[in-house]
Image (cartoon, rainbow, N blue to C red):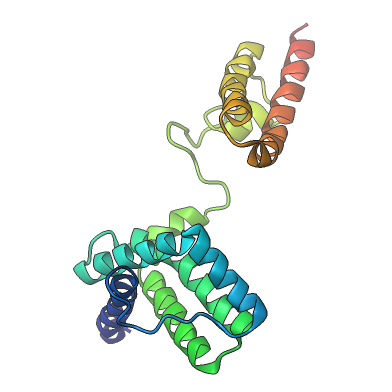
Amino acid sequence: MNRLLLPARLVFGLIMLANGLSHFFGQFLPMPTGTMPLAVQLMEALQFSELINVAMGIQLVAGALVLAGLFMPLALAAVMPVNVCALYWALVLERDPLWALVAVIVVGLNALLMLAHMDHYRPMLERRPLAAGEGAENGEYYESLYANPAGQTAPRKFALALLPLLGAAAFFQLIVPAVFAFFCLVVLLWPATVLLLRTAQSVVARG
């Protein structure tokens, strides 16, 4: 396994770096534009919106970091969505065997290197991880303080917990474009509902 990692890292890093450099500095590598209708539409949308520059920039930076051995878990995680989207484009939309094979190899190398750094990702896979400042004892983490119906949290703490939600709601309403603001506000409904119900429960229990 260890013998595979260095070649995989070098090949993957070079592919990412070369692809990014080619996009920004002269197009010395072939860039697929697509022949199938949906594939062409997606590539045109990426070009016109310049989102392709973001994707290629991520590949460029990730490739350089992987080759240098710096921040590899972060670089691999950041570039994986870009590579998965490229795989979907080649395999599902364009259905080109050659580009699909290239994309499968790239995603496979990306996944292999991420598996080699699994220790860095394992905390992200915990079902209920503790946030910064939380403890493992009852009353020291969010669920026991706010979500557990049997909890004994004072109403004042619920009021304080609502303040960040109100700030986030104000930001979404006043700053974020309306087309996105609605969905952002919907996301806040669950924590807001939990806190309001627990506040009412706490007030009644203490009354």
